[in-house]
Amino acid sequence: MKVLAMVLAGGQGSRLHPLTAERSKPAVPFGGRYRIADFVLSNLVNSQIHGIYMMVQYKSQSLIEHVAKAWSSSTPYTGRFVTVVPPQMREGPEWFQGTSDAVFQNINLIERHSPDIVAVFGADHIYRMDVRQMIDFHRQNSAHVSVAAIPVPLAEANAFGVIDADDRSRIRGFLEKPANPPPMPSDPTRAYGSMGNYLFDTDVLLAALREANENDEHDFGHHILPRLIKSHKVLAYNFGDNHVPGVAGYEEQAYWRDLGTIDAYYDAHFDVLGERPRFNLFNPQWFINSSSYQGPSPRILRGDITNSTIAAGSLIRHARISNSMLRREVIVEDDVEIQDCLIMDYTVIRRGSRLKRVIVDRYNVIEPNTRIGFDAAADRARYTVSDGGVVVLAKGQDVPDVTRYQI
Image (tube, rainbow, N blue to C red; front, side, top):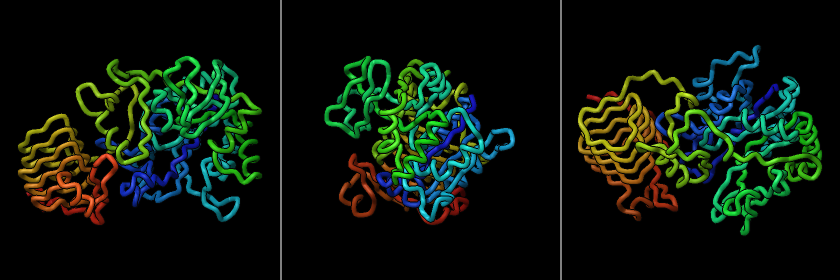
């Protein structure tokens, strides 16, 4: 089967502000060295899907540059490529008006490759998935469309777009954050949440895109899929049945997180920490690719560090660091305490500072003896504070001259 992937990576991510003030949601850093978009791209490539178009729109420059650095080994003549596609405006002056419109505006790319199946996947989530297993399900059940569905506890399903499916996995309807979500046919305690990942038979997709365009409709979830369930075989693929090699028994087997809010983004980082993390980023059998940073190993001169990640190029002079992630080229001076924090690249934390439950975006210099995360009123006056009390420092404007702090 020839499969072409169309990755939707134009998300604005307004609820992740200020992390999305200057970048799209898929470009937001995650963990010690990744961007959110790296996870869907890695899933596709690990699943032997090598023809990938990534459609970008909102503040896309950092994502374009990242993909060029991390995914540049493209050979389009052999069908192996990861290509970024901004709005082409082939049908008029409009930008992408929605998820299906983004694919429709690039319908010529699908026609050029003539795939058997088109995978339309989002770029906003953290997860591992063997897409080949979903393709096998799609083919074995003669589906026209398959929708990836994650089982979620019934009590939590009202926060999701919920799929109503019968005992043969055929989808009867889509409900957006319903008060009384319908349970899965096989488990009355859980419901199917839509993951925003779809497989389409190509002819079905092309016809549906053209019909939607004629009707001035622009979205898969709100327009195309509700119409197709009336005329075609649209099935729910149970993500809980997907088994990725190398996943440890202590991990959450069907791990998937939508990082739609600051608190969800913050909490997901603690799922990858610890001796037995819910989601272990180290899996040689299912590698998550990212940029090949060539900086040196981190240097820790003196410190008390527990349950934390320190990325390449960082320097810890003398600090107490617990339950935290420091990305590359972070400088931590003497007598600094960092607890339950996410510190992004090229940040300097100067002597005597104390940080607790803080996200520090790139290019910041925390001045000596600064206190953040201890006085809610003072923090709200200067920074963004999430509903869960996480303090967020917006991205700085200039890269600090880290050499002056390394002496």
